[in-house]
Amino acid sequence: MKVMIIGGFLGSGKTTTILRISRQLSNAGKKIAIIVNEIGEIGLDGDMLTRPGIVTEELTSGCICCTLRISMQYTLQTLEEEFMPDIVIIEPTGIAFPGQIRDEIETMGLSELSFSPIVTLIDPVRFGTEAKEIPKFVETQIKDAEILGINKIDVTPVETVLAAEKMLYDINPEAQLLKFSAKHQDDQFEKLLLLLDIPGFKKPSLEKKNSIEFSEVSAYSVLYTLGSQDFSPEESACFVEENLQTIQDRIRKVNPEFVGHVKLSMKLPESAVKGSVTSSKEVPQVELLPDLEDKKTELRLLSAVTKVPKSKLIEIIESTLEGNLEKSGFIFKKEVHEHDTGAHSESHGEHAHEQICKVNIYRKDD
Image 1 (cartoon, rainbow, N blue to C red):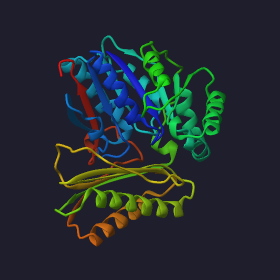
Image 2: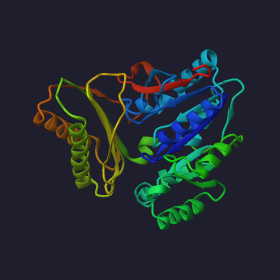
Image 3: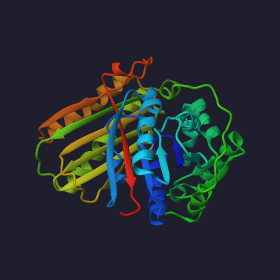
Image 4: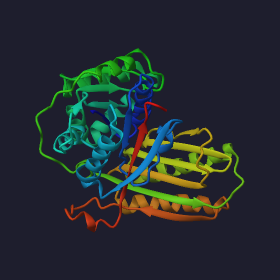
């Protein structure tokens, strides 16, 4: 069983990249499993990775500090015993350390295990801001990589791409550096697929770190179950965009240079919309989703941003969403999923709140 770890900071394009890779490998006859582990506890990207022929399963784990030791081990062992995939692709949380993930997996006693080169994706538009905001954290992700992928070059000025390339080379000159657009699957993206077929090599282990504490990221997720409301797709898109804009403006007042990810999705009987914003400077991006089999009416938000107190982040999100839901005439019910980002308890039965880890299985015969 080969393990591919595709890492990168929040909003670097990991989900799109993995979707492209998994489709191509599956079309080539490989049996593929994808494990998605987001920093928030409410899954939001499952619909993006779910396509015809894909079985989706949700597993729970404890707080993020022990996800890899407990839930990841159970997940990989179950996949090995019951599904026997050729390749497992791991999309870690955007603040995780890919090298630390590999170290953890190597101690799990899985048979016939091999690794592809570790990939770290970079959004060049935000790279300079990230390096300034959390330099040690970003530097660790870059140093862990055997392949550095500068993504989104189709929407990035050439001079910005070149500046990012120089900075990456200064930090990790040994890594293979690629520049591509995962969205359009260009020639350099095809080269990434070829490089992932080559065995990776183990780098010297570093001292283990708690990624949330190290990155100074506050995370909060919330789910609102919605009553019926006559909203057109265009009205849903406007609702998502306006809420993201307000949340961004309010977070910016606390930290004018914040980076991270705020993702918001809205599902109604006649429409499904998702949107995101990844920094204090980026314009919110919103898109309509294709018709989904899941007809739940709900609003989901996942957030992880730098240097904003969690209590303030919660207040901004809840007051914005609830105020606008009431203004639009929605009846709603809130579900909150929390995790403890502080000191770790080794007694996993003590975790009162749990995190969702999605597993998508691509079957050869689908």
